[in-house]
Amino acid sequence: MKFLKSLLKLVRKYPIISFFILTFLISWIPWYTGGSGFLVIGPSIAGLIMAFLVGGKRGFQNLLKSAIHWKVNITWYAITLLLPALFCLIAIAINFLLTKKLPNFTFFKKEWYFAPLLFFLMFIDGPLEELGWRGFATPKLQQKLSPLLTGVVIGISWGIWHLPEFLRHGSPQYMMGLGFLPLFTISEITNSIVMLWIFNKTKGSTLLGGFLFHNSLNFWDNVLLTELTFSGLIKGEALPQPDMRLFILEGVVATFVAIILLIATKGKLGYNTNEYS
Image 1: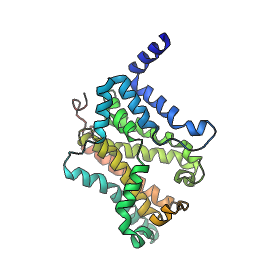
Image 2: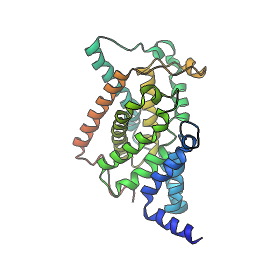
Image 3: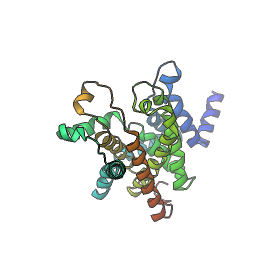
Image 4: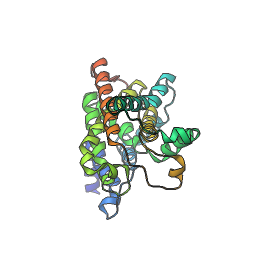
């Protein structure tokens, strides 16, 4: 009992470090127990546990409320859903100027009418970790660090967190290759900075700054930069090999946008020191 009390005191004293430790312990269970891959929902489970331990019932409820905080200006929905598409389209345009080649746009040529359903399916199977990264860790970190450093810390953790997927045969990360992990992590830093800006501008909406933006990234990357089809996904066919040139170009474009946001907001990324107190 004394040990548990001491541990609880330590967790409450260092909630951010405790969150990251708990996230990796939970998420990587399949990998370090002899299996492969990870538990996508791990960060959210860790976030909910930490929210309760640190803030009690109120902290737990506030975290859940951030996930359904939808009452924001419609402009932010447009930005959240379409900005990742812009990243991809600019990358495609740059690639065309360099190589005179365009993707086949297989999904939109054959199954464009499945777009809403595909987006929904990706949503319930994709960004399940956001209650942890954006919902719990982001506001806690921003109380201690600058928005830029917050984005960097979460981005690095987010990137490394994917390590088991780089070792799981058949995953998108496995097809990229383990050598791509450093670049992948840099892209996660970039994504974290852009998501942090949306999160702050929507007054802490994990729904937009976390779940929806993350899902938009996954959706547009797949339908614009790969040969993914809805029918193939439903049939359980192997995921198409990604065009790494396009993915790298998209990351460069996103990084450029993140830098513009940092300059335009003077590094604040819309953060209000009184917003999450």
